[in-house]
Amino acid sequence: MTDTTQRTSPTPDGKPARRRFWDSAAVVAEEAGYTVNLDGRPVRLPGRALLLVRSHALAQALAAEWAQAGGGKGGLFAPEDLPLTRIAGTMIERIAPDREATVAALLHYANGELLCYRATHPATLCERQAAQWTPWLDWLRERYGIALHTTEGVMPITQTPQALEALGTILRGYDDATLAALGVMVPAMKSLVLGIAVVTGACDAARAARVATLDERTQMEIWGRDAQQEAMLAVTAREVAEAASFLELARRG
Image (tube, rainbow, N blue to C red; front, side, top):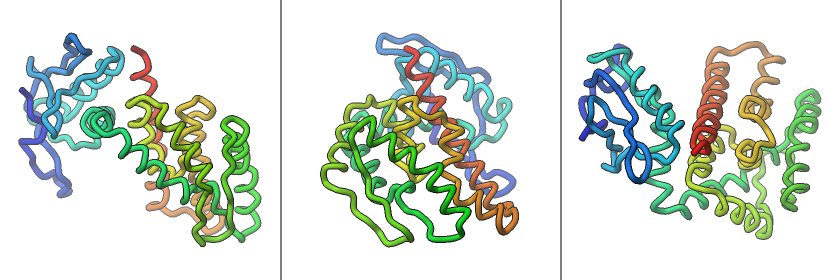
């Protein structure tokens, strides 16, 4: 079996990486789904579970990641080069055995819901938050009957037990792949509402990421560009896009 937790080496910039030890990656059909084989050996996740998915389209995308990682045998690659594999691994080894832990972790974001914390200044930011954030809270209320409180500033607020219970019911109704996608999207955007909007098809990933980074983009507009901030925004957009891609592929099966 292929153990992806071994053969670690440092990259030139000192970041953890692994050295590629295979020539080819291929999808293999199994009774329960599809695995990814490296030179004929199935990939095992850090917890020793097989990288096994039900969607052939997802399996093909996973194999493509492994085929590209490191560029060729002996090359260095990092976990960031295998985003779909990372999400699949979370789905298989963490979510499937204990779905309630994931639901609880996602619900934790409800009281800190990004869209509920509004600025008091500058006026431009306040106006943009009202124009771009309020419609998604309205969407949540109209579609699910869930009303979330908003506040100004950073003082924490607690949503009602009814709202939290209703959000929990929504999350428990999702399959493991959807919870896995949300497990990436929600922390990246700091918004459970936007995550739900993406997985239900009400909002596309790129738009959701832009809505979630409204504050940062507006601040740079006012005070000037910041390379570090721009890099962080790019990471957010990429992570949301990767999670949405994972979910779309997983649903093709």
